[in-house]
Each structure stands twice: as structure tokens, then as C-alpha cells.
Amino acid sequence: MSIMVPSTTPALVTSGHQALDSALHQLGQAADQLGLDDGLRAMLATPRRSMTVSVPVRREDGSLDVVQGFHVQHNVSRGPAKGGLRFHPGTDIHGITALAMWMTWKCALVGIPYGGAKGGVAVDPAGLTVRELERLTRRYVNEILPLIGPEKDIPAADVGTDERTMAWVRDAYKLNSGYSVSGEPMAPDGSSGRADSTARGVQIAVLSALGRAPAGTTVAVQGFGKVGAPVAQHLAEAGCKVVAVSDATGAVHAGGGLDLARLRAWVAESGGVAGYRHADALARDDLFELDVDVLVPAALDGAITEANAPRVRARLVVEAANGPVTPGADEILHANGTTVVPDILAGAGGVIVSHLEWVQNLQASSWSPSEVELKLSDLMRSTFSEVTSLAAERGLTLRQAAHVIAVGRVAEAHHVRGLCH
Ligand SMILES: NC(=O)C1=CN([C@@H]2O[C@H](COP(=O)(O)OP(=O)(O)OC[C@H]3O[C@@H](n4cnc5c(N)ncnc54)[C@H](OP(=O)(O)O)[C@@H]3O)[C@@H](O)[C@H]2O)C=CC1
Ligand SMILES: O=C(O)CCC(=O)C(=O)O
Image (tube, rainbow, N blue to C red; front, side, top):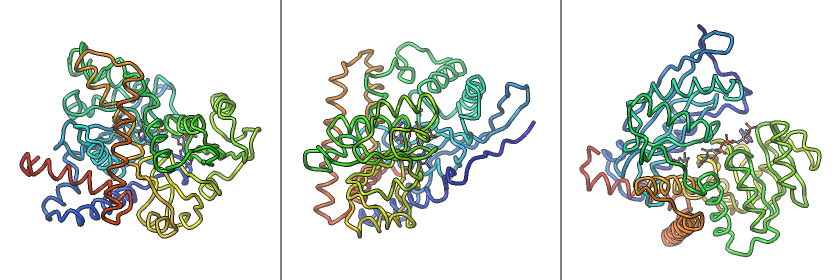
């Protein structure tokens, strides 16, 4: 048996400590604005529950590896915990705690009755076969079984996981819990629009923040996965010119706009944007420095730091990813006149439609794509305007205003329910 030490290039390893520092800094600023007392600050700064598990994975050659898995419920004062499951080699308990905290604020900001959770396994899914991945997923679910369930914690996909992973999660949960499938909120057929709901929400955030017709607006998107690729598509369909995208393999740039269908076909064939011949190749992280109107980080946390923020030329940064801009970078961008639409607002489309999915399953009903789209866009737009109004009224950045609203709602729930919740 061997303990699997995640191997990856240093540039791909996220720092969980850095993410948690960022999340705590943002919480501290909101708590100051709200005048929260020390006890409540301490409760909000620490997760309600967190679990580290060892997950044995039987490899195809018969050997056994053991990887680390994590599951954190940051807060459940407003409802069941909600958040994605991430498979990435840079995953650690600190980063998962930060991501769970951001889920608490994201759900509170858009006013859906969920708390915040996140799960993760420190593994590179690209290094496993489908059968190994399935065994890993099922075993991870067995280990975290006491924490999850349709009424207490409902997982969804995140980095390195997808609908197939979630099908294994649901099946493993059912097999081990004995919970009935019928009408089960955790095993929905899936709401229409869930797959690209995060991207659709990001599109609404970009268009709302632009405040003008999007035609000709140049955009660069970091990350070309489940969120980044449809974000690029939605923005192009809205009239923007998507001139650059990146993934872990590299970046590509075309001043006249990328042919996204052709690029997607290349990525499906080759596994990444690198080597795409119909655009110029770019060093991966040079994407952040392009002279574009809008920059959309849609990969991992800690992408824009104090080191590269001074070279960001976009006037608008819209965070599809969770935690892509560190607090130090935030200050630099703000000082340079760049507006940042924060993750808990811009990236909320996915969890909004997860909630709509949950409601449909509870009601044993199914809404049409246009009904789901209308509810999503109404909530994104009304939340955007609530955040911008508070920011203008109090002289805050959009991130500070979003956190004041979200943390305030969670603090209120603690007061209403009693501080032990
Ligand atoms: N899925 C969802 O519903 C939601 C996701 N989010 C957030 O959006 C972000 C992306 O998630 P998702 O799209 O689901 O994840 P995916 O795993 O589907 O895609 C991640 C993408 O990021 C790329 N990437 C990884 N490292 C780098 C890097 N250093 N530079 C450039 N690109 C990189 C990956 O490239 P490669 O394929 O080459 O590895 C891939 O294209 C995450 O922060 C996630 O938490 C937020 C809300 C909801
Ligand atoms: O839809 C969900 O439940 C999870 C969404 C998520 O993980 C996120 O917004 O980061």
C-alpha cells in the first residue's frame, strides 16, 4: 500500500492557507462594518463541522493508494449545507474550509435557504481511470456519509468533478443510507439549465456591470472547463469579443475574437488549449495582462495576487471562480480603477439553479427551461442591484458590500435561532 503524494506542477498547486486567509480577511471587514461581537465573529470564522478522511483507491494493477479527502460544513444557520465536491491535487483542509465559508456567503447573498459546505479530494482525476475514479468517489462518500444527506448537506460538482461523479455520489449515498430514491431531493433528474447555470449567471453579472451594450467588448477568460467554456460562449453570444482563453496547458489569443466552437473541438480532441493552431499561443499567465475590457477568472483561487495585479489592464474583473483575487490584489485593482464583481455574486448562478432543482424535486415538478432561466436572471439581477446600491451608499467595493449583506444575513439567522446554531 502506498500513500499517494499528489504530484503536479507547482503552478497548479493552490495554497489552502492563502484562500483561508483571504476568506477570513473578507469576513473581518464585513464584521467590522456590521459591528459584530467577538463571539459571533469567532463562530463565523470557524466551520461548524469538518472531516478529514483517508480514501483507499484500488488501482487497475491491483495496488492500493491512499488519498486524503475533506468535507467541511461551514455554517447551517440558514438551512442545509450546500457546496461542490472538488477533485484536485492542491486540495487541503484549509482551502476547503475557505470554499465552504464562501458558499455560506454566496447562498446568503442571493437569499436561498442554504448554509455553506465544500468537499474535496487531493487527487488529480486525470491520473486515474474511470473505474478508479468511480471506486475513489464511492469510497469517499462512504467515509463522509454521516455528514451528507438531502436535508442536511447536498453536494454538487466543482473543479475536477462532473455529472458522472455526482451520479456515483448519489448512488453511493443511496446504497449506504437506505434513503429512498423516489422524490429524493438529492437525486434529482436535474433541473433544466443547471449545467451552464454558473456561466449564465456570470454572463448576467458581466452585462450588468458593463452597463452598456456589450458589442465589441473584449474579454479574456482564465479556465476553459465546466464554467469557463460556457462563459466564453455566453459572452460571445451576447456580442462580446472573446479574444483569449487559458487552461492548465496554456493560453491562446486572437485579436479578432476566437472561434469558440473550433477551439472546443480542439480541446475535446487534444485535452487542452495548447497547440491550437488558429490563434496565437500565449504563456498561460500572460492572459491576465492582456489589454482587454473584461477579465473573467474561471479556474482556481489565488489567480490574481499582489504580484500580477499591477499588470492587470482590464477595467472589469468578474470572478466566476471562487477566491481568484487575493485581498492584496483587490486593493491594487481598486486603486487602479478596476471594478471587481466578487465570486459570491458573479458565481452564484450554479447554486441558484441547484436550489431551483431541489425545489422542483420536493414538489415532484419540472419547470420549463424558460421558467428556470427567468428565475435565475431575476435573482442575479436583483442581487446585483442590491450589492451595487449598498456599495454606492456606503462607499464600499462590490466585494465588501456583498459580504456585508451576506454576513449580516447569517448573523441575523444566528440571533433569531439562538447563538448555538
Ligand atoms: N461547477 C460549478 O457549478 C461552479 C464552479 N465554480 C468555480 O468555478 C471555477 C471553475 O470550476 P469548474 O469550471 O467547475 O472546474 P473544471 O474542473 O470544469 O475546470 C477548471 C478549468 O480551470 C483550468 N485551470 C486549472 N488550473 C489553471 C491555471 N493555473 N490556469 C488556467 N487554467 C487553469 C482547467 O484546465 P485543465 O482542464 O487543463 O486542467 C479547466 O479548464 C472553480 O473556482 C469553481 O469553484 C463556481 C460556481 C459553481
Ligand atoms: O450548486 C451547488 O450546490 C454548488 C455550487 C458551488 O460549489 C459553488 O458555487 O462554488
